[in-house]
Length: 175
Image 1 (cartoon, rainbow, N blue to C red):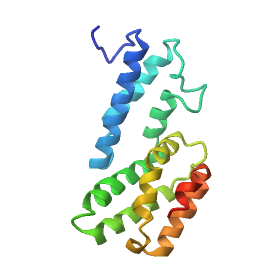
Image 2: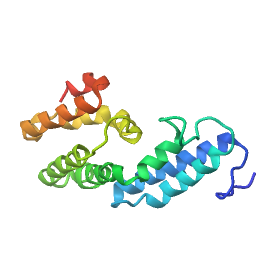
Image 3: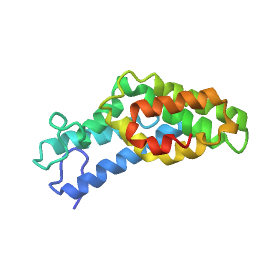
Image 4: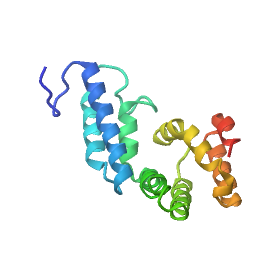
């Protein structure tokens, strides 16, 4: 089978793998530079658009809130720009700097969470839900080190996370 990014191959598994490969590459590139993953997210979105017409489930942009089509569309939307800013500040300016300059890293981790708090739409935000699902344990480990952060800032982060993801309360209680 020959890969052609301009047409759906008819092999749903191959297209799912293509979609998630583009998505993972986009997330990785966003962590290295501001909006660095736009090209990969665009390819994921194009794959989802091609998949929508295939008849296979999980591709529709309009029918399901949690579909591959909606995930790629929402990541690229202006409404989720702060989510992508979060990724950059959290990974590149925060965690990646932790061992070299902890003060700088901590301040940038707090800046990262300010970006999340600036999201206007956190209810039914599929990319935010995916992010929190992937990072909840890491958040509890990083921000659970209260001595490393100003306590009132950690309390703000905890309150925000409880508001947007109450189902993960057991993780937020560790902050």
